[in-house]
Length: 476
Image (cartoon, rainbow, N blue to C red; front, side, top):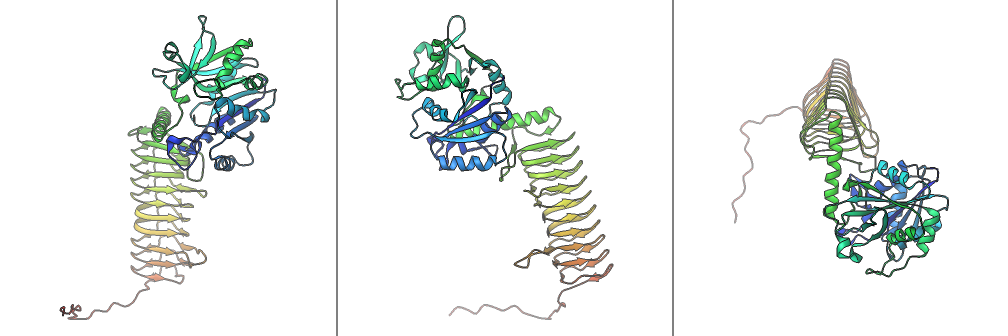
């Protein structure tokens, strides 16, 4: 194909059945707006431009998509408004002033998120530079879809919408997906001839198929068997069904690469809350238990094991590490690194900037943020390490914290190699605990310590013999 490619995405509908404050095309599947899925696929085709037709919630849609695509995209992104919404043909009419006559136009729907780029490439190949190509699929239950009407020779003649179809036409199982490719020069002329003489009183884009036939322009159908690729979203139930189908496909792809999953039906891979695109890369013999969520960019080294009910986002996990159940890791922009053979959890939390070396142990109810733990360091229970540099083989006691925030600024705690921090200690930053030192349980440390020293910073114990608790006075 030599003609430039332009994409028109219909995204003006209200989506009443979604029962949401937000436009339907901004509902999320795998953490990403439905419309963004469609535009990402268009970008894979090296499209010259994408014209998004907005209507209901137009300002919200345009702002969200502009932000998600950024200013450095290779595809020229444009928006046009359809107000009021008078049908699919009327929607594409609004895009005509933004299209050039030398291009091939592909029309997509903003609520059909899972069409594959190779499928669309097949549609483009079928269209060439002079044909209209329709993406079709055979469905056991075609209710609600426009039917593909062919002649005795099998040539496409027209599309008839469900509400305008005869009984015989409704029996046809080959449906039009809503996706077509057509030369822009023909599209513009046919759109100008549309009328709304139909049961809905709308301008149907599908009517241009009969116009193409009448004008002698070949109409070809590119038929696929995968109905999921053309499935649209109109309700929360449909969105949930499509989510599960999509996640199962992702799980199967990973298992084909060698990943072991306890149950592929209980697996999720999605964009993170900041829009980082979902990516999960696994080495050999990785094991993933049930109900795990992976978000943003996650890499897992060979032999690593992920326990049940973990949430892992923007993290690199080295080989042979074990992430025990109910661990929450979110690296956000700074990322998190888990070293080879490390043991994390259960019920641990790793936040942005956590860098854990080889054989590090982070146990239950331990939180680590913006801290580096060198090889062999351990914090096994009920502890907090924030803005800290921890040396090799440090043992960090239960209930101990780094007091890193003074109400205005964050400060760093340095714990050098082979230090032992007792239980229930407070290390008030900035402070350094020198190599080989020991901090007695219950201490509050505010000053740097010497290497090898025992540091105890707590009040002297006092015991009062024969002391009695106060008693309540009898009620009057």
